[in-house]
Image (tube, rainbow, N blue to C red):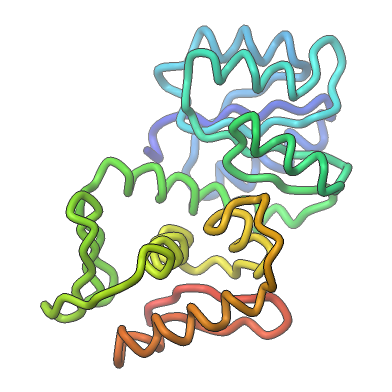
Length: 225
């Protein structure tokens, strides 16, 4: 998908340039739009080529929520919302409308690129039925997990958590983000339940359990080295 295009929608020219420069350095092609109306126009003209949309919330003419709604009427293209507001209610609203990721400004361009790469990997993984990382093999169609050829038994939640970690390989994921994406955003339980599930998964993976790294003060990440 690296030959496809990423649509950058933001009313700040400087912000668009920064994002474009970092994505271009990683080999991605980009398209730009400075407001919501232009975003819809550019998307309609290039939707078969666009692999991901970076969409600012506060824009003139048509805000990001309106653009999101229109795109979702005809496409499941991955969308990352960019906003200066980091309120929980905004995030919940975005997830309800079909946002794939939510990043609050200011943000590190390197982190943004990492999120883009993770989502594109995940989108590509959905097309693949088999994922193989460091000897951990997941058959998504059969919902089975093998470690060095041996089938291991995981509960549904353990399986979904492992999938989420793997699809975001090398990305440090906070406990809140894991709860939002694996337990769903309306889960109000204790985040320590994640630690319990991680412990069980590590045990079941055996030596491969070391791939699930603890990121102090944040959460976890899946990293094969």
